[in-house]
Amino acid sequence: MSTEQQQAGFNLKAEGKRVLRGSSGGRVEQKVNPVEKAKGEYDVVVIGGGLAGLTGANVMATQGYRVCLLEQHYNYGGMATWFRRPGGHVFDISLHGFPVGMKKSMRRYWSQEIADSIVQLESIRFDNPQFSFETQFTREDYTNKVVEAFKLDRAHVERFYDHLRKMEYYNDDGKTIREMFEEFFPGRNDVHRAFMEPITYANGSTLDEPAITYGIVFSNFMSKGVFTFSGGTDQLIMKMRKILQSNGVDMFSGAQVERVLVENGRCAGVRVNGRDIKAKSVLSNANIKGTVLKLVGEDHLSPEFVQQAKDVRLSGSSCQVYIGIKQGEEIPFITDLLFCSTADHFTSEELCDLRTKSRTFSFYYPKTRPHLKNAGFTIVSSNNARWQDWQALDDVEYEREKNALIDRTIDHLEKYIPNVREKIDHLEASTPRTFNFYTQQVQGASFGTKFEGLDVSMKLSEQVPGLYHAGSVGIIMSGWLGTVNYGVITANKMAEYLHEAKAK
Amino acid sequence: MTDEQIKQAIIGIINDINPDEDTSNINPGERLRDQLDLDSMDFLDIVMELRKRYGVHVPDTDYEHLASLDSCVGYLRDKMAGKELVS
Figure 1 (spheres, rainbow over the protein chains, first blue to last red):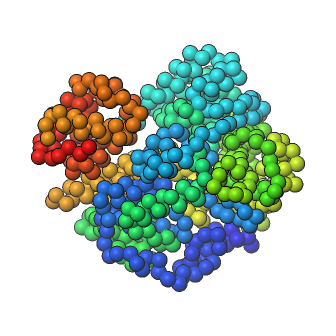
Figure 2 (cartoon, rainbow over the protein chains, first blue to last red):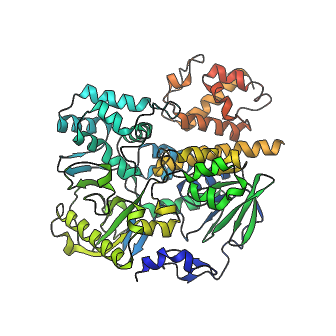
Figure 3 (spheres, helix red, strand yellow):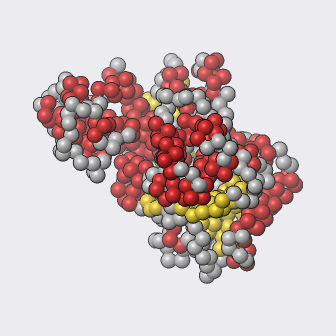
């Protein structure tokens, strides 16, 4: 049985004793209670140190509140994470690329130094049987490329962008992305692919989502290009932790929140590792369904709200293959981000098929980690995946499918870097089961929820005053930028709540 | 705080959150959104900075009052009374 299969069943087996999560595969027993040094009471307790939780905690701390952040994993960052492997490899899980807006958000809610480390990706490539081109993904360059590749009228493409920009959350026309694409580019599966594939990789959405979700996410990207954090995810999270510490946030990892405490109908704190910590307000950065149905529990909620939470669909999950190039070996500059497929046509279903022919490669050259002397080359491939497909496999099938995924991925990569196989000294795959284990996301969700999750997330405080949620929900709040900004939006609501509570 | 100082307080916040914006020729009667490149996160930042710098609370139902400099003055006059301008 593989480590991961042990991990998948970890929750059941570990009952009765507390273990540390992480690269040890969840087998190391916790000897010391990680929240031993926490104070008995805070203004704000944050459950989960993903980007929304970290940012919410920082915003509240800079507004003068006493904040405690609790993270179940030994590390912070949530899905914004990385891991190390022998051979000097550092693998980034979700660093692939974010919109330019991240620069502004980092400067405002974190520091100028973090903002200054955000750099533009040089190149993004598309390659599939329908088209092949390279772009910087700026509005101007991308428009040039699609106009040329698909013989489109530039003014029509601009009209499409303008239509997308005008879409607002409170002004939804009820159309799906599929309907909108058909309206603007009827029968053009190749054009739909060019516009949809990158967004599906970014947030798990399909052609059947509300068009509004596409409008907001695509408009964010389609501006000045795609950006990344120079230094890698590990440096980003380390800098954030230092800022939180200097702002007085008490942070505890390995801390498993068991319940949100509710007293007299209001949020009163949390139970973590068997200990109660009081708090005037709580920000949950855990999965919204888990927050509502497990941490709060149905007793404190209206039946309608419980049903609404149960009905929230998740945005799907991912598989990744982590490819480490031997120290001393080099690979040529191919591109930073490669969206590639050998599938003849584009369908949303094909993208998340168990044996999909479509994937992205994120190439990490030594420039990713300029602070390291011997920074090497790593490549991370990602594809969309369904929890149900991977969960249904028995141990033998699971191993076989994982190995087949690795083989398919390397075969695909060889098309772009011939004989790359010989240069690889580390290969490893993750599946929805892996994401479920490390982040405790329901069904290994790697993109949060579908559109309806946003409403549940935003209305949680109406059910339990003082309790708030922020994280990847509703597609439009997903991705690094979406979740960071949602953390800020929610922190602002919490500050108002605490102010009103104090006035009373 | 005088009306003029309230305007300066708002412009000071906008200058800090968006250093690239030219705020020297804002028409106080016109919506800020129509003159500057401000998105909904920028407005949220104005609200948070008002709280941080002046202890002024603006509930989300009142955000519409922050549309222009003139409407800000009308809305904030009582709330900012007796407070010192933070530069």
